[in-house]
Length: 443
Image 1 (cartoon, helix red, strand yellow):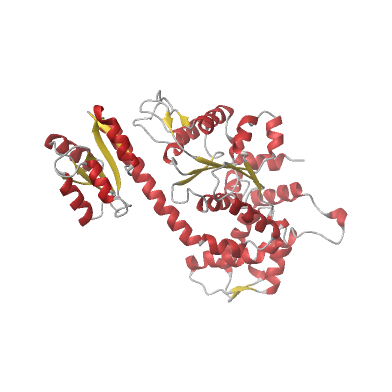
Image 2 (cartoon, rainbow, N blue to C red):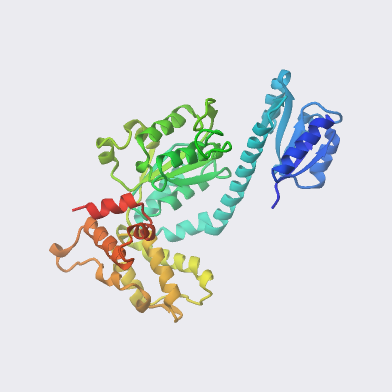
């Protein structure tokens, strides 16, 4: 859907310049020369953004804002003002304008402001779609049957009016990403952007650029200014998965954002103010990585206003059956099959399995079973043979394997199945190569 912009500017040369520039950027832009026409245009057709001069014939920019209040909440407004009218611009922002720009203005700066507004509006729509798909309030209660998960959801309910940073800990695949989305979607920022990034998947240079953006010419290949996720997430939430993999240098920069609410783009000299809530996650022992010097203690304390440990799936077996049904319904539409559930034997096998890969592994198993199953119920025949091999042994306690051993054996079997390709194995397991190497190295 095209991003539609209405420009209200009484200076004809400026109006033509703006229309030409914005249309070249690919936006659908229209122009009017007075405030009455601007308000009429907003009333008659949907516009995502109004760029209005604060002083013009008919209605002023402030008067347009007063009339739009409550009627057209989906239309954002940028006010154009002179250097001598900054006070009026501030008043306009109090009345609902999202930003202002001063004459003579920098067209590149205006383009960046518009892109930020467009990205935020797109993210709002995506978040809305996500909440509709998951059915947050309804579905979460259905898939959280165990005492451990009910306790976590009760805790999230208790912090919904707080803006505190949150640290999620737990093994790989327990559902930290989903929980981060739930925390955001039940918070005061639920209608604002939710962005996420996996810190283990990028080099330090690329991660810095993704998080903080860069100025044109900051490095080879930086042909234009780019906003980072911290800037785009302004007023919303940024989820930093596998934060323990972030370099000490980037940890220091992140700490400054959390403490001061500002940062510099890569190659930038101007501080950029932001208001972002951070949710971080790690599958590592935080005390160990702090003592090893791989994670800053001061950053840990800033992120760990509220720490939530998500227990592994083997410790919340009551969740396996409802989760299996949820995942079955989630993936069925893709394969056009009429499967209504699981046989008792198949469900017993799932409940008796230790799930070293946690919820992520369960999801892979369910999707595989859907593909292979020819009956109306999932049967043991379509479940992987490795599940029976790795079921927890309860008859002889001395034969019970540690979680580390199970993780290592499972990882080795996946690598063997993929012909020794460790990169592919890490991708299938949903972990970084570093994490896979760490699992294989454990004695």
